[in-house]
Length: 286
Image (tube, rainbow, N blue to C red; front, side, top):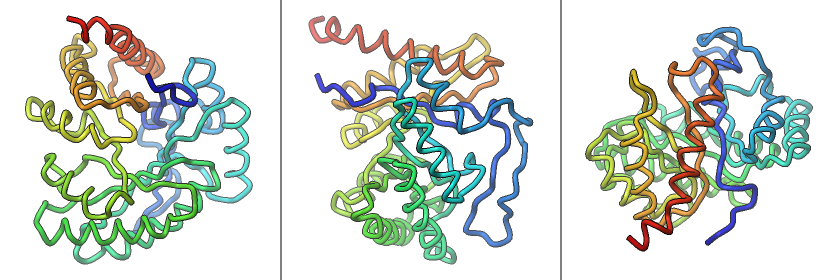
């Protein structure tokens, strides 16, 4: 079995959005302000302390949402990278959280806004940069427009050490048909971050079994109800990953008010996946 550097688990700062508090609205839209806002409350911790917090909980991979970066200045970027190195935390992905390459009016503007984030990702030591493929309906025109813009962006990233990836997310990519079509266009230049929670059940299971064969990383988001984690759904999603031969890292995405302390939800999901992986030999011989 493949042994991944820094283990098989990552945490996205989205899973800690209440703990971190403020968000910064970086956007290609000149009408939007990057001034800090607190839609989830004031927070109780700083981003720069998260690498040590992850390492203390046995997680050595990190993904950062662009809106959680309190500064894009070189000094701060250097300090954050040093914090990750000091904690032996690998910066897996910078998640660029705005822009729409599929939009007829602003797609080119948006993808050109995304391009400078490549340098930020590289300066932070990120392996990947996840961008939004598109938010428009999956017409041939919109898909072709997004593919062209993403191909250009991937070419801009060549030589940077940062790989551009997209996600099965938003209206442009509602099923494996569109997802595979889009990934085929740039001829391997753009990768896939497969998300377990973006498509709806029951159709999502076969969809995940299809696309996760192409995934390099995975947002392992769990659903929660009044009784807690939806174990049947989470297990089924993981079974689809296994069926597809996915052997990459799992980014723990906790997005529920069920646990007041976000770490409790994150670590519950980590334990669930660890138990699932531990049972893999028994499933293969059953």
